[in-house]
Length: 437
Image 1 (cartoon, rainbow, N blue to C red):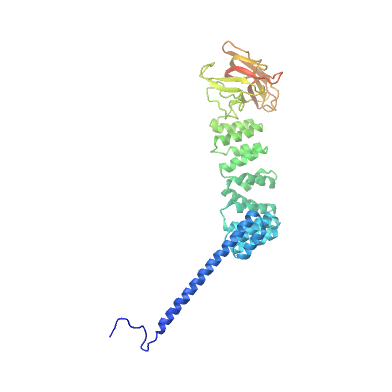
Image 2 (image 1 turned 90 degrees about the vertical axis):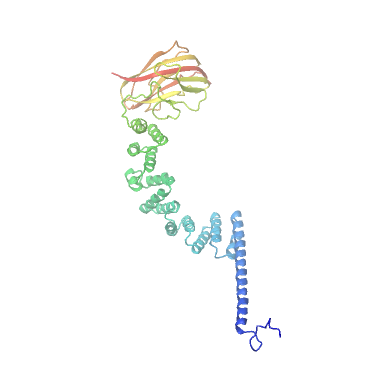
């Protein structure tokens, strides 16, 4: 008798019931798996086709492909968002708002969708709807600047200044580039009332105080600009020079010097009359556009440099060389000098010249810096074509009732013909100014 392979049956020769159930369960599970797999494939195909229509509609600006995309996948917030953007660009704000609303409902924790919905409602003059949507965007992204700034703008136009500026200030804390716009809006809201502006802005850092001081100076509020500028601590040279230049442009020479001296001379009080670096022993820089010597820029026919080989005293003089066509009134060298009104002064200096050839010879002129500087208060006679070594010169002038500063400059006399080139060299040294009784 063979005993190896016996049939798996019960005593009556039939398959056990539990075996039948197991086989049926395997078949059912396999069917369910295939069904899920096919469903997933179909869903993926639908999403792919929908996104394809969506990308095409977005790229071409056509609304029809986007409508098909929405029909294929009505539960996809991205296609609703894309359709809304295209509708909005086409000027169909009402339909765009509906699509943004559907997108936000499908993905309610996306702050960008609420932000876009708020902006669309704002464009449609739905003020309260815009505030509601943007408030939700802010709630979802409390540290993002843009939603707060946009909410603040809507509140501002609604006349709710306190709420608006509270949102805007927090936005600026996150994004300092918004500060100039914030200051400008407060200026308009409070009609230039600087005290009210500062209560809203609350400038607590040097960056904010500098922005406010710069804004005041640009609007002619020089007293307020100077007051804030006095509180600044860690200004870069560029920032300080920019602020000082604005004050000089506004003829606020004393205030400008005070701010400039805070960085250049550690706050040294100006002793008027004040002429700096008269012997050119300190560096003369093209970058100087405030106090100290200023050198002409962007005129290739005029070259200015310190010279250690020829000097009247000390270690250096300043050499100015003309080599071609240049405007006769171009100030090759100049300096703003603080003075007092209704006073008589004399400026002394030394100079030498070499091979000057021009229809307009060099002169030293003094202008009232509080005016347009079109006519000099005084000037020297033209410097000679050639000099035998160094010669001493002087120029006397009297300031006006409103003169707080003058500008001394080396330039050429006006020419009678044009063009009027110039050639040759001038050295100057040992400038000084004295008040004459």
